Amino acid sequence: MYIFTPITKTTVYFMRKIFYPLLALGFASLAAAPSHADNGIPGYTPTEEIIQAQKEFSDSKFGIFLHWGVYSMTAQGEWYMNNVGIDWREYEKLASGFYPSKFDAAEWVSAIKASGAKYICLTSRHHDGFSMFGTKYSDFNIVDATPFGRDILKELADECRRQGIRLHLYYSHIDWRRSDYPKGRTGLNTGCDRSQENWPQYFTFMNNQLTELLTNYGPIGAIWFDGKWDHDMDPDFDWQLDEQYAMIHRLQPSCLVANNHHETPYPGENIQIFERDLPGENKAGLSGQEVSSHLPLETCETMNGMWGYKITDQNYKSTKELIHLLVRAAGKNANLLLNIGPQPNGELPEVAVQRLKEIGEWMRKYGDTVYGTRIGEVAPHPWGVSTAKDNIQYIHILDYQDDAIFLPVKSKVRSAECLNTGETLKFTRTGSGITVSLSKVPDETDYIVKLTMDR
Ligand code: GLC
Image 1 (spheres, rainbow, N blue to C red):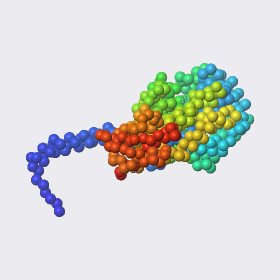
Image 2 (image 1 turned 90 degrees about the horizontal axis):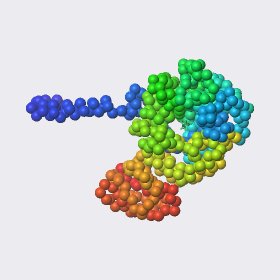
Image 3 (image 1 turned 90 degrees about the vertical axis):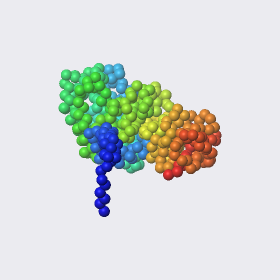
Image 4 (image 1 turned 60 degrees about the horizontal axis):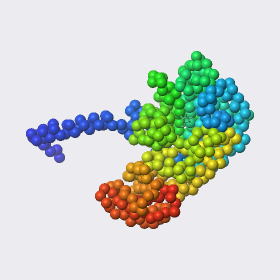
C-alpha cells in the first residue's frame, strides 16, 4: 500500500540540513576513497583471476628468492659488472665457462619446500643481461652461450610443477650490455655504445622475452620487475608499463605483476614490494612510499648480505632472526621473499640449506599462525606482532620480557592458550584490553598466545 507522507517544515529542514549534506559527503568520500574494485589504483580494474591470485599470494606468506646467473661465477654479487666496470665483451666470456655441474632442480625445490615456502622467484634475466632460459632474442643465454647448454628455467619450472610449488620470475628492465637500452644511471662503464640507444627496439626485445617466459614454462605466478629506478633522473622517461603489464595479463590472466621501483604502485601492478624493509619502515633508505591498504605486500630480504653469490659473505642471519622476520612481515600483512644466492657450481650454499631446514621445522609446528592469516587486532610492537584468521588471534611475542602482557584487544576473548605448550592462560579484562599471565616456555623463538574470540 502506498502511503502519502505530507512534506512538513520539519521534513524540509531535515532534508536540507542533514540528509543532503550527508549524501554529498557520502558521494565525495566515494569519489576520493580508493575502491577495492580497482585495488586502490584508479584507472585499473583487476580481473576475478587476479583477485583470486592475490588472495592466494597473501595466504602463502613465504617465498624464496634465487639470484643466479653468470655473475655467480665472479662470486662477487650480481652488481660486479657495473661496480668495477667490466667491458661487456670481457664479461661475456664468463658464459663460456659456466658449467654448474651440481645443479639439480629436484634437490633445490625439495630443500626450498622443506622450509615451508610456497613459491620460488628466480632471476630470469638480471641487469647484466644474461638470460637463464633458452631465448630466441639474445644469444647471451644459458642454452646457447654456455657449455652447460641446459635450460635452467625449464628444469626448475617442471620441478616446481611436479612438487607443487609456485614459480615467479624476476625480470630486470635494465641491460648493461645492450647498446639499444637507453642510458640510465647505471652500467655506464661497460663499454656499450649508448649512441645506439633505441627504446622501441629494446621495448620490443623485452616483450618478446616476456612472451617466451609466459608461453614456454607453464603457469607463472608473478613477474617481478626491477630497475625502473635506473631512469629516476628523467621523470618523463616512458617505460610503457601499461602496455607491458596488459600484455602479461593477456598472456596469463592469473599472473601477478610486481615492480621493485620503490614508489607508489602503478595501474596494472598487483603486489606492492618493499626491499630490505618491512612495509612502513625505511632503514635501508629504499622505501618511504605509502603502504597500500588494498594490494598484497611483499618484503624481500637476503639470508646474508648479498643477493647474488658472494664468496666472502658468510654473514648469515640466524634461524631465529629469519623466523622473526617472517613473523613480523605477517604481522604487517606482508609476505617474506627470502633470498639465496646459489653457487656457480649449481648448489645452494650449505648454510642456506640448513636455514631452510630449520625454518621448516618451526613452520611445521607453527605455520598455522602465519599461513592464511592477516594482520591481527594488536598493532605491531617492538615486542612482537599479531596475526589473525577467523575468530582466532595469534599474539607472537618475539621479545619475551615479563610474565604478563597487556594486549589492547577490543573483541570479547573466550579463551587464551600458550600455543608452545598447550597450557591455558589466565587473563583479566583491564580497561581497553586484557592482561594475560604468561608461563615460561623452553622455545623462545616465538612465544605464541592463541586467543579465541567470540564470533
Ligand atoms: C636491487 C638490486 C638488485 C636486486 C634487487 C632485489 O634492486 O639492484 O640487484 O636484484 O634489489 O630486490
